[in-house]
Image 1 (cartoon, rainbow, N blue to C red):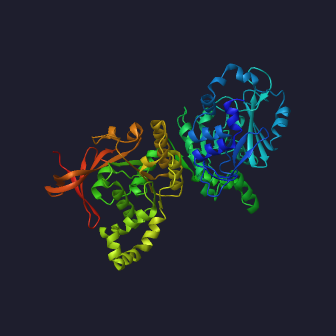
Image 2 (cartoon, rainbow, N blue to C red):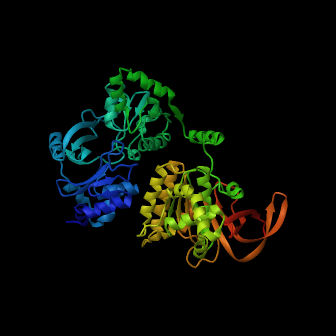
Image 3 (tube, one colour):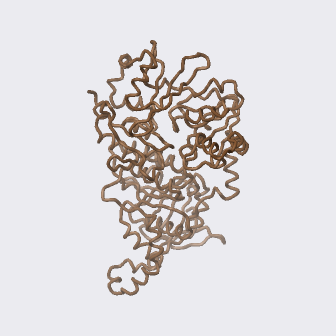
Length: 585
């Protein structure tokens, strides 16, 4: 038995892969890591061959497979590359010759039906080769829920094999859309057949569900008017966004329209088939309803994203969150949507104090945020929040608390409601170190909840990896994708490299991936001795003693790149004052 086969028969290996992807597992119940799964909709089971598999039963997802399928989905890699890395010696020209070839489709159906009842069969017709589908998709009902299997013509010999053909995969219902001027793209063959049943023929979908659009051949849509109809959920909308990005590059370019599911009164993962069923119940003319939704659809082109961004900026929908310090806000624009900001500084530079002063201001302003504090527990941080809000550092002194119990108790009572609300947004340090994959899952969950600011303090407290540069690159790429899809901002608190003596991008922990893929890098420096700094003020230059500098090492969205701001902390009142830009020496 190969290493690959042994792992596929190991339940623990599948569970480890699911957890690495962000799943939560309790017994056989699994919170699927590939969609916003608030109530566990996945399960783990062993198939007839003893291979452990995961299956998500949510209608909006439907993902299923063994541990290698999970790894491929989580990393965005092709399953063939995953298997080649796992068992490189097995990749040989002879491996395909051992693949079972079924002489007829009846033999294929008999083999597939051992896994469950075949509910539907979808042939991916080839307009140029009648009666010879390029692929057939079987929808099964198994004890674990809905499942899919693919079959395709065997290469180099007559018959069929139980797998999809080589990429790019064909679109469904190509014969009907080949000569059509207009076409509707939906998610799933079931929706295509539902629309065909009411007389809308020019409908298509890509195989294998959401997230696989990049594997399909979309060229047949070139030059057409195309209506993209997502399912009514985040997964469906993201899938159609990816399809849009693919087909907008076709030549000639199609005219692209996006149907909004809410214009059809669709909610909670509902799709075209659900709409038709609802209209049949109410007696409403479903074709007229779809025509109205098409008329209301937005038109998109390659540059339409910029147009939408401009309009959102003018209306205020697209705007940055303000720091508690106006010059930092204006010069960095570090908290625009879809941004990653690195906050760096040596131990003792007051990075966490800087961050928590900001979190307090955002809480007071009603801006939703979430923070993962990896070094201390919630009580530790709430104690400091209370002292900051009371502007009294003595509240942190145990001797002062013993000597002044009434003062401390009164301070707590004044701040109790705020602390309760603040604490709900604060996740404290776990007993065991979190891996970067676990931190990624936490960021994904908080972004899905609608938090505008997500922070990790410090990201360097995550469990170390043997190949840190690989783990860092994977992490920063993953979280950047999350904030882009959710229009939120991420703050990662970090440290300089061990032994670093300079302040600059090359001295940042996390290596090249952090400095290259983040939009903003702020470096907080605590000076060894008080310095007299010349500040550029609104009325001219003035000189003041300072103990802290905030270096704007990178400000991709702002104009402050390379500048330094003077700050001073008044420790008795725990205030953090921004003086302004430090003049060039």
